[in-house]
Length: 306
Image (cartoon, rainbow, N blue to C red; front, side, top):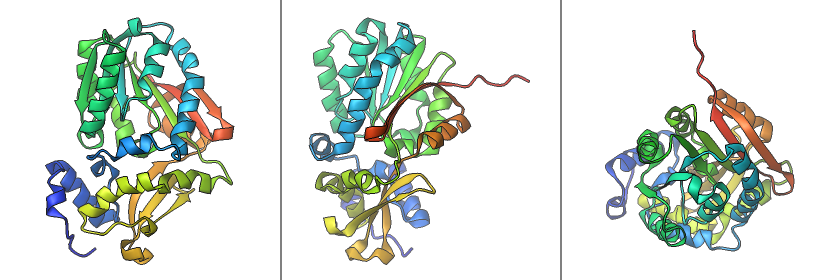
């Protein structure tokens, strides 16, 4: 790829590490890492957009599954490490199911400081006695070990890692490995995920091409000095890589396209295989076929002793 023509003014909002990730990713893979676009307030607009069907599907699956998750936790006291908390819409669902008295520390983690402010305000108002820690972190770049360690130190022995409606983050193997390495033998990992379903490709793609999502992706495009128009984007489901991919085509030219977003969309069998390979064992998995979504609860596999 030719030398990058970055918008220096816009790039000032990135950390040094994020800027390095952006440059390397675009040069080597023609991919704009989504983590660099969440620095503005656009995510709140997406969360409030009634046409963002993906959020309503995953929220419905979580509400139906959370009593079973709470039962699997068996009333034990846990910390919650809520990664990519966004505007905090899922927090009351989790707290009410697990029970506030059973939560040692509730850590909210997000790369977007504005979203973190919104969710923290909601949590503290609704649950004033809940012990809350906040982490403004790019967890893909900086890892998760410190977040888990500080949460554990401030609260209970056992922790529940939570990743809800975040196939984008979950598509990163290194990030998922980081979660596993940060978990102890008494910890759990709660996941909700949209699945791939044959014949539903367009239904899967469409929520990522609504104006509010494209306005978010425009943050990354403009960092590279490009003009962003909605008609410059298209999407596909890559069944081989089990990824939804949204592309930006500079000037509408598909021969110059850049990957603007990717999100993991497996079948249940593919998800099970991946999680086993990454060192997790499944305690619970509930699939909702009508909305091609699942909720799963994991623990780490015991380490082999030689």
